Length: 467
Ligand SMILES: [Zn+2]
Image 1 (tube, protein in one colour):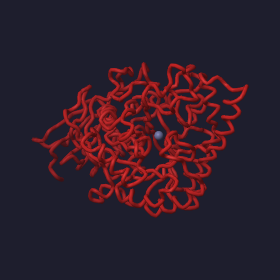
Image 2: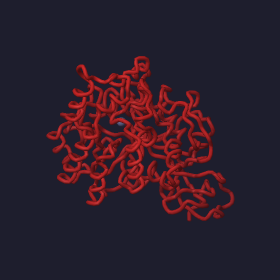
Image 3: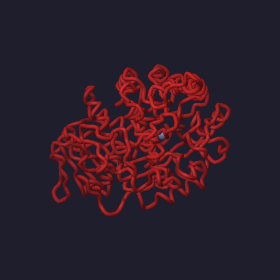
């Protein structure tokens, strides 16, 4: 066995195979072996996690960094600080809300220019599928994007329009040929337009300060129809399809059928759908607005069941911040406010707080927050688990700590978040990226050491082959 230059060990090391004592041997920033706790050669650097939990570096495959072009909303420096603080050693940036969007090779180049040298964690990139850019997809894939995102309903920004079924079909054949996943904002416009005209227009219009009015404007049917459409297209084209930020429990049955049929069809949900309930959202509290919406308590519990039985594969943040004035907090108008929740830094503690109440384990956390997102973006050979060959990315987590969300410890560019003031269980004590500490108890090293992960720019063993 190769001589390690660092050994990280502890009593609760969460690997794909176990959750007990182990000693992780690291050489040149990579894990070279996982052995018995006492198996630690003399003379190498040693870090002992003691009784704290050692999790794999988390992977957050759904983050809107908004840079370049909307750096006032967020940015690589602030977003990756927040990521380091929550133990997310890899984030994957969304192709929209930045200007230009990542829908052309030129857009990707500008994105890389904005990110280079500024990231405290590793960053990979999604490309975008929009009407008319079918011819750019191969170049984007060649340029290193992990896959493509599209919307089935207006996205909220003009430069990233949604696609129709007619545009999806040829795109899915092309995306299958490129062996990339298509991730889909799955809401259909029809049910939303019908709901809007009945609940939000005319004399019978609901009060826009009431969450209930907004909830009625984004009915479950919009998601259910979209999931059904994508399932049909997945079957027809064989392309890999992934549903982002799934909220409606009414379409869980369809997701189950996809799993039973062994289709290349996966889904994620987000901490806010698993934590909040529409019944409890105060009037005017627009920091809770996102699309699809946070639904009822009963819906939330069914999402937890779907995570438990593997119907939903992962939990990612969908961190989608904006300047506070766009949330129109003063008027409290849910219909006019920007839809997006700021949450990158809170995913681990928020999920742990809820998961422990429902009897879930650290291995569940490692699967939902690290291994499955890494697999989605083709990085499972390098990220998302404590196993030989992977990067030496770790999170030192104190699961019993009581932590409160405050603006002082919030690293996001803007502090407005629905988690403000919330008492959470668990705290990240330190984060390691390739064997180097990039965060420890409120402190960061001077210079950022994150890499830009581009498919094709490294030896191919770093990226997963076809599956
Ligand atoms: Zn998003």
